[in-house]
Image (cartoon, rainbow, N blue to C red; front, side, top):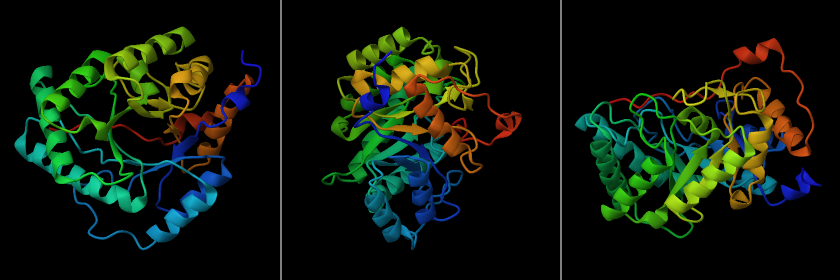
Length: 321
């Protein structure tokens, strides 16, 4: 055990995905109140194709409050409907159009990352799906020119269910290679490691030594520094079940030891961690942030109340095709 785990956390940023329905500035104040040092949001309706025509009126105040509280980096999570691997032309074209809009919007928020789910080939096979992803990413990046300190487009690993792509290290590497071969600027691309998805995909990261093996494999396959952000979630699902069900920190199948090793892993020293745990608007945002601090201190976690099992969470939705 580290002699001073909280000192080891120095420089690392741990935050949470918070809804903006109660107000953008209030969300930043809430993040600060629960001890979050980075923040993830939806910039628009995550379940709709249509993107807002103009930025929200609260945006300048939102950015000012983020700066005031030194909450950074900001990540924007893309809509659930996106499917970069879609074989249906209508869905694929709408995915590209929506992602272009999100990538153009992200700098107005001061966002460092635009995080998206990779999608599903829906029975058309991995090779076709990877090719569709590569061409979609190429088109998106071509339509949105790079700007200084502009956001990275961040692809998130999946649990591998429903023909979902990006569930394994090998698939992520194949996707990156295909994007580069398509002529896209891969320096504008990063990856997000979602711990619940990795567990569902079969990586036994409840064991600290397996965390080390996974991160070493990702570094070999994708390159040093390609992991841009981490979604720090426990899981309700069985190992290798290809099911994505997020759980409160330390209360799921991954558990405290594995999550602790993820946060303190040397290769992730400069990577921000974002919780997507249940009940973010029901008070469990503060509880889960405190549970992170407790596992870093090596303290036993208290039992959660029965109501915790009913808390609403950020749900990954299967890509539609």
